[in-house]
Image (cartoon, rainbow, N blue to C red; front, top):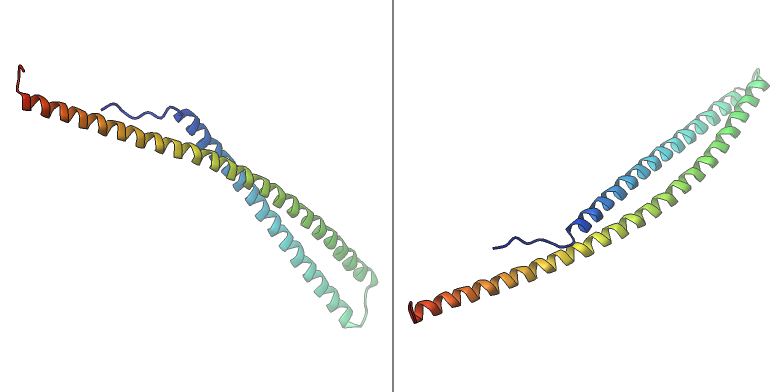
Length: 150
């Protein structure tokens, strides 16, 4: 039996490699998104801590240091700005991730199309092989039935 060889095997391997590359790129973007979300959480925690500290200072009521209060207010305003910027960074990364996910879907679709074609060709190969084998068996049976030399 001759071995099955898919005529577009190189193209299939290339599409598989492309899919893997796109998936790795998507994973890197997802890692960046996770990191950006962690940074946002950290900024929000810092803001809550600073607000709590400022409320404690103001709640003490006695000997309020206005410079210290002003420093806390400035720090909280800076954290608000940083949080706003971080939200924009996260939105940009999410858009990038969405585009990469679409690329992955397209690469997967292209790969699956070739895999289905390979499967179809393999089934045709097996059918052809079975037909040839049946014909050979028929020829052998016919030769035996007729006998040698007829």
